[in-house]
Length: 229
Image (cartoon, rainbow, N blue to C red; front, side):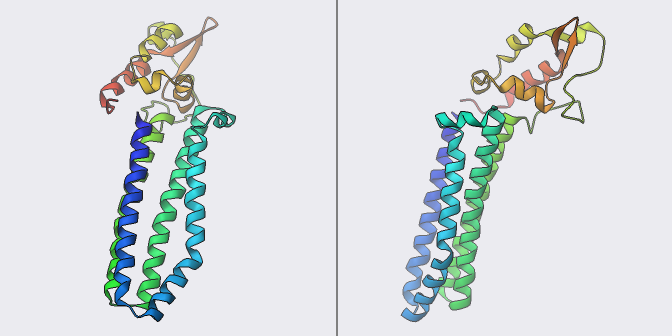
């Protein structure tokens, strides 16, 4: 379900960008043809770069959802791919909007077009930053960026302590964790991701892998913090 939130965010940002760019282009009608041509020629020199970065970012993000995205291996790597791709998309839009604003201020300062270009840059920037915030939440939630951890070293996944009451069997731990939102329960890499990020500690006792009872309880409380699907 969260994928639809991302797609919806992309559509909203695209519509906002289109509306603001349209308003800017309409405002150039007040300019003489020479100034207008200079603005459009200057903007066009870099437009190919913004379009290339936008398309590349979207393709990079979509790779995680396509069948051949499995070549990335772990689920965490696919989420990083989504984050990197959509970050490139958002940043390229922001830089492109402010580049156009700079060109207009140089060629037609203190005009209606100059004000329209600045408003477009501001609105597009706010929209893209909002989308980046959603992307950060979406990806970070899945790779464990926001997961509570009692270990300052994420690479150390085994927790000290000999009290067997602090540890539970793998089967029981997985049974408890399945109460997390459906998005997590369906991802076979989710528990591995929790362990690798340090959010869920393990310990080998008598040759059997045990999971921290405290960590499992903490993770279960996250259920009430999620937006329901």
